[in-house]
Image 1: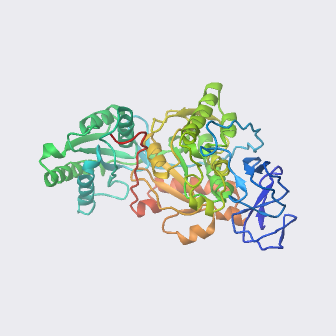
Image 2: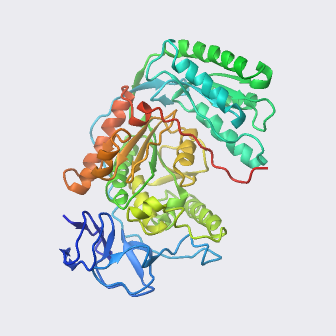
Image 3: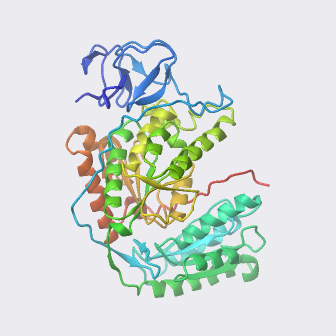
Length: 505
């Protein structure tokens, strides 16, 4: 197969390999060379008419487009997130034509992990060292490395991990509250056995307050804190921190693993470095895995609010009730309103230059592919950034599209395993939550094999279908629970970033 036409209503198709001028593909004569992953018109499209892909609008033609012509940013204008042309939101009504078959599996998936006394389930059993403020970053890093490269007893699943960030002081109250929520939620994640919070002593987000709140949310955890000013400087803080972490590790390595099921999974779904194949292979495959996790009683998080602009009609129709539907629409449109008020075109920021190079032409097109990650189960709840996931089923969390800010928000919400799809390739991973990378195409899987775990390029090539790759994802989740490291874990990726709401003061 040389190209794919997703829906009968579509007026564009996607090239699955380089197409040459004069080639006849899907009954269309190609008028200009088309790169892999890029679109060509399958019908004449008049200037001002909508361009249709995934049976939905992905923008309008900025000039007349002939059948067989290359369709991209030069002749397709996005209609959403256009603060450069609009002062208000565009209300573009769309019907939903997408298939809603829910993926299912009768297979039994047996997990092995760390059952916490509150019933939550950890795939890992780490000791986390985390700063309350950026002034403590170097001390945190030195504590983590001193223990990691010591001869203290530890395993791949029970080890010391650390993160750093650029927040915790000079923040307005609501921003400081969000920073604290993310730090607390990360410490409370079930993949963490114990936490050491390190502060400076004079910051807005205080180490003691963070530690106390983690204890409230997860009373079973070992939680301690120290401040550099009270400890007497950098060297003494590192020495004290190393002693604390070694004590915690000595206890943590004694914890025995116990059995779990997919009902214990809180799956974070993410796509980053997307290309036009992301919505055709990797994201639908992750959507199938999401459906099956929910079928077996688990929880799934859909995030990246900016990357749902233009797809909110699909998600809203799947809301379990009217309040959830209204929350979906108001959250997505509220985020778009922020973009509009910036008086800039969202393109270039999202989709990014790499996304555009990979064939994505507008935020609507990216969103229509992104929403496939969520499968076809009902949306049962809408949560704010880093808010704890408390419902079984599919939850929509309000996060930015930024990969690391989004991942950090889901982990703070309790995500214990993440699947991250990519078309261009990315090494991103969490220190706390195992992050499985799924490539949308075989080229990036092969070129970045030290960073990517699974390949959905097999769907594009026709050697596997979406259901099969979805089951492959579930099998890999089981393997991770049994101790297999993800590529991000092997590479010691400890990416962590907090969504900043306001300016530094």
